[in-house]
Amino acid sequence: MSRTLAIVQIPPLGTKKKKKKPRLDDDSPFSFAPVPPQSRYLTRELAANYISSSTRTIDRLIDAGLLTVTHLPAAIAGGGANRRILIDRLELDEVMAAERESKTRKRGA
Image 1 (spheres, one colour):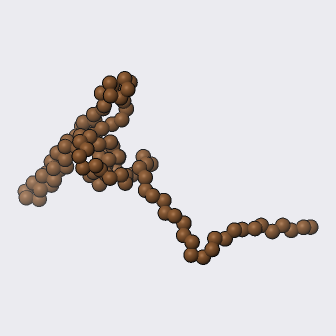
Image 2 (cartoon, rainbow, N blue to C red; image 1 turned 180 degrees about the vertical axis):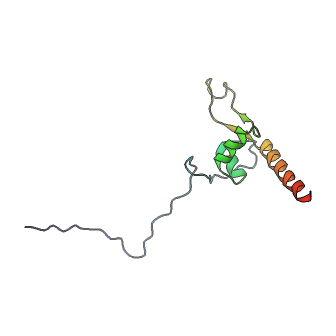
Image 3 (cartoon, one colour; image 1 turned 30 degrees about the horizontal axis):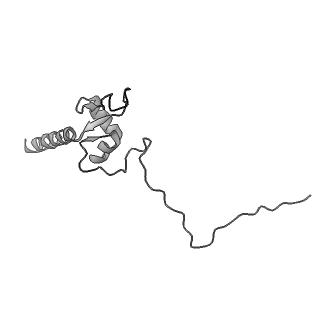
């Protein structure tokens, strides 16, 4: 009966693994991409980041009719249908301001 030994490579002490950088991913509830300050139209992920929320919350606001979905014109999108959802940042600001005002009225009543 012969025995075999497994050779395991152990890293030297003091070495650290590199941390993974956060990335945009539909699987994660939050996005990490910075919102450009002059952008008027935001993707779902950027809109979620803009209001410190998840893409699911943006989808719920769209389904409730509080946000309007905008698409690029077909001529810009290469002649075909464009599925990318864009959300107007100003409309998002209005929805958030209306929510803030309704909370203020409830406290004052």
